[in-house]
View 1 (cartoon, rainbow, N blue to C red):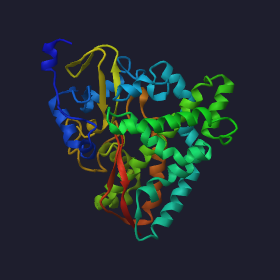
View 2 (cartoon, rainbow, N blue to C red):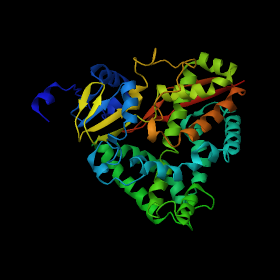
View 3 (cartoon, rainbow, N blue to C red):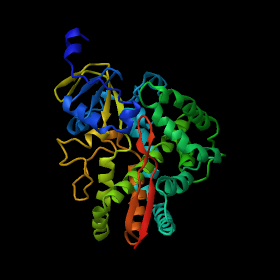
View 4 (cartoon, one colour):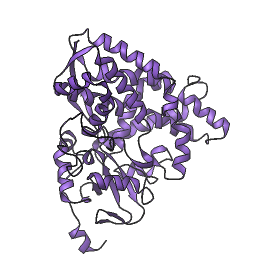
Length: 396
C-alpha cells in the first residue's frame, strides 16, 4: 500500500478488544461510525465497518469479503481454520448448511417446541415464588443447558463443559491478546473431544449429533466433517441465546412501562426479542478477508485486508435508528443485524427466538413486574453479556 494511502485513510487509534472497550463499547462504536464508513484500526491491524447500511452491504458481499480464510481478528486462529459452517463460502456453505441446519429450522424445532414451552412454564412458576435469583444461572441458562444440551446428544463430559468451550471459542475469535491466548488450550480440548469422544456409540440415538452420522451413511457429508459440525452446534446453541435472554430481561426490568405494554399486547413479543437483540447484540462482530479490493461506502479497503463487521455498532447507528440507545417495543426492527445477515445469518436464531418467546409467554400472565439489579458483565473478546443479573419476578 502506498504511503499516501496509508496517511489519508480514516483511522481510529483504539483497541477494539481492550477490557475498557469491551465493558463500555458504545462510545467507541460511535467514534468509528462518525469517522467514516470504514475505519483503519492500527492497534488491531483491522478495518472496521460500523454503520448499518455499510455493514449490511459488506455482509451481502460474501464473494469479495470472504469467510473461508477465517473470521477471527487474529492470524493464529485463522491459520488453523477448518471448513465449518462459519468459515466457508458459497457454494460450499449452502450445501453444508443444508445438512447441519435442519434441527434448528422451523420444521425441526416443531418437534421440540412443546417441551421447550412446558419447561419455560415450569421455570417461571418456580421463579415467581422466589424472593430473588440470578437471572443468568437461574433463568437464562436453564433452557439451553437442559433441553438443548439433551438435543445435542453429547456424552456427559461434553454436556458438562459446553459453556466453557463455547466461551473460549468466542474469546479465540477476538484480537491477539491474553484472552485469546488463554482460550487456545480450551478450544484444542474441544477439538480433541469432538474428534475422539463423539462417536456413534457415545451420542444419544436420535439426537442432532446422531443425525450427523446418519448423514454420513446417506453420503450427504464426509465423515471428517462430523467433529467440525458438532462444534458448530455447541457454540450457537448456548452463549448467544443465554446472553440475549439476559439482555431481554434486563431491558424489560429497567423499563416497566415496556413490560406493561407487552403484557397488554402479547403480539409484541417477537418485536421485544428483536429490539433486545438490536440494542445489546450478543455478538459484537466477526471479521472477513478481502479477496479483492472492496469499496465500503466510498472508502477503499485494499485486497488482502482483514475487515471486522460490527453488528453491535450497526444496530445503534443513528443514520438508521431514531433514538437508537432506547429500548422501544414500538420500533420497527425486523431488519437488525444482531443475528447477522446474508448467507451467514445465525443458524441458531430460530431456536433462540423460540426459547425467549416461550419464556415471555410464560411470564405474561404470571409476572406483574420485573425487578433487576446491577448486572456484572462477562469480559469476552466477541460476546457481550452478563455473568450475573440480580432479578426478582413480582407475581401477578
